[in-house]
Amino acid sequence: MATLSRVLLYLIYGVPVFWIVLTSLKNPGDVLSDKAAFFFAPTLDAYTSVFQSGGLFEALGQSFAIATGTTVLTLAIAIPAGYGLARVNGRITTICLGLLIVLQMVPQTANVIPLFQIFGSWGLLDSTFGVILADTALLVPFAVLLMRPFFRAVPQALEESASIDGASSWRTFRSIVLPVARNGVATAATIVFLLSWGEFLYAVNFLLSPGRYPLSALLAQQVSAFGINWPGLMALAVITSIPILVLFTCTYRLLREGLTLGAVK
Image 1 (cartoon, rainbow, N blue to C red):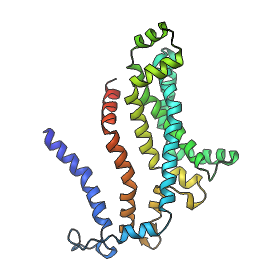
Image 2 (tube, one colour; image 1 turned 60 degrees about the vertical axis):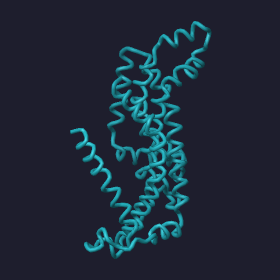
Image 3 (cartoon, helix red, strand yellow; image 1 turned 60 degrees about the horizontal axis):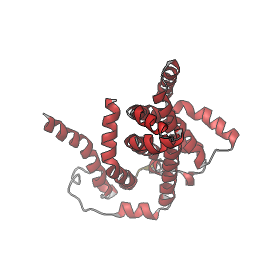
Image 4 (cartoon, rainbow, N blue to C red; image 1 turned 135 degrees about the horizontal axis):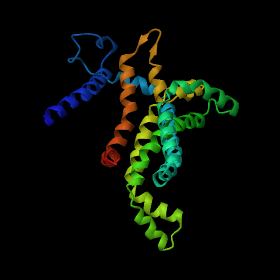
């Protein structure tokens, strides 16, 4: 039964990926042809066109800047907040957790107009930092809720022993708590990076210059009033997915262990 479920999951997630790669290697005339569904002359014209059209590397750099900046800023807020909520008990903790859950449930679309007005008054429109700030505000509640169980799993006896030995609170946190909770930090960082890598809504609304758009917006530009360039769209999707695949491969073990621990705790 377990083997059957695994095979079914592989098919559900693998077939669309296989079809994307297959479509990226076709000519535009073969995409909608039944005869060329699986048997066709593969070509790299779509990839060549993507690299020659310009804007790919700028969009790639923008996506990397947004994802990296959002991850760093989110962790800078979520780590101390999650640790504080893990160590403080009482009504205030319950209220804070309830507020975080409510904030996490607010749809992203509901924040666009208020944030646009705020960023306009702050001079952050058409700014990468503005998008990073918006993504951070969106992902901080999720990251705090994710980090809290990992800090609760750290025995308080370790902190008490360090305090007896004369270590300051900051040194105890930096040298003992963070290394023990490193799986949680890696899990939160990976998930936040993956979510912010695909940033689209805030980018197209807060970045006023199309030349500053990330990869997700560049994908949307393949759809025009003259139709959809399916091979180009799929080729760009493959290129966009490569950094995510590399990151997931490198952090798979920590991500698996971290999500398991977080679910149990």
